[in-house]
Image (cartoon, rainbow, N blue to C red; front, side, top):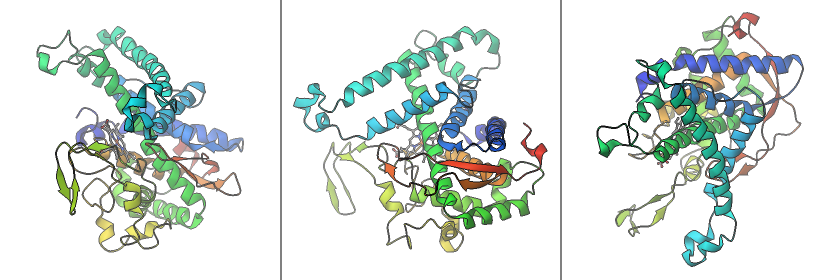
Length: 374
Ligand code: HEM
């Protein structure tokens, strides 16, 4: 609730605003040198910092540089390995051989993450006295550590805490940034969409100031763009694998107990029986009829990028806000052009759906200079 509830989301809006201010500042610098913007790297860094400030009370990465690159690579490696079919899972007698080397890669990665997370927890412990009376998310969690908690049934081990941090940083950075990157890749190939979004923004906001989250309800075309990206490029294409705890029947299919189940979110979003011309990126499909009210947060089963039901994404509300706000700021603040002739739209399969070739684009400012000052 401290981080993902409705009230908390509103309270932390200033963090997202500041972080986006930094990001567009860096983009402005790149634009003045006519250097391309590598979107994925910058988005991951911004996203990790937004989460870092809420959880740890501080940014975790600089806007560019080795460390943020390495973190992004680690998250991508985690998502890729987690999506691989591991022979040992299906033939347990062979598991010890780790034939594809997946377990080895995961262990190596685990050590790297453990190093970063241990440092985060240790730094936080060392500065706890500075936050007495004003605890942040991690302080609240750490108050329930084994040796602190009054109620042992609620106590958390250091591993639990590091696992929670890892979950939030990995589940919360790559997913919105990949949805945004795909949206921008689609639009870079179709300037008409960019122009339509920008003219809506100019009408509603003007060019004197930056877009804020409170503008979003007045920008239906921007919201349609984001829904279209969630439909065509859901960042977790096969959801997170689930296991049936008891035998059941779904749509006349009998599912035995302990069956591993995957929900193909990607195929649902491209089902030609539901979506006309499903391979076309057409935000306009969300501007008319029933689709206008379609909500990607689990209530309309044709569009479930966050899953649905009790175990759906805990960060769905934050995910929608991040995607709508960031796509909005990017489109409102800059003119966009491809730095390559053709945009490669190939996907790399994993737990998360990455672009094989990251988006690289040239931008030029379109707002009054004072709008770029943080
Ligand atoms: C575009 C944004 C996002 C998308 C599309 C997305 C999608 C998903 C999906 C499909 C799941 C699995 C749900 C299921 O099993 O039914 C999930 C789980 C989860 N998400 Fe998100 N997510 C997004 C953003 C976020 C954010 C911003 C956070 C938090 C900061 C977050 C935290 C989590 C966590 C903690 C889980 C549970 C992981 C687990 O079960 O181990 N997500 N997300």
